[in-house]
Image 1 (cartoon, rainbow, N blue to C red):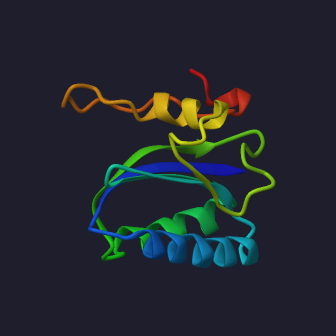
Image 2 (tube, rainbow, N blue to C red):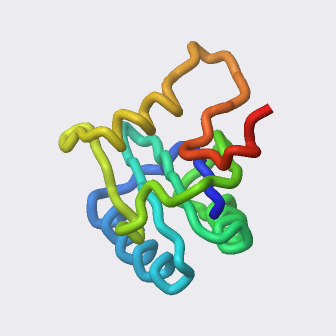
Length: 131
């Protein structure tokens, strides 16, 4: 199992456009055994994807060239032991409905006062990922 987290700046999008992204994502992800979570807050996308490495990486290549956002930055990726969002083809989280998963992802992508630092947090890592 493989996961990937990225952050990007959204172009101006309305609620209907965000909903369209979710509908299409859920359909695509269901067909490709990808699960995950999309966060959209104050013009920023944060997305967590998990599934087979090839499927997730292929999807990320498509995401990087999507014209609905820019400044796509890979935050974390690697092998994981099991899924975090095993029942969600694409969950959507916001601050209006806080929960543990949202707080966890918020910690992963919290501001570092403009300094670029390597992301070293990998949810649910395989034991051999340490070291």
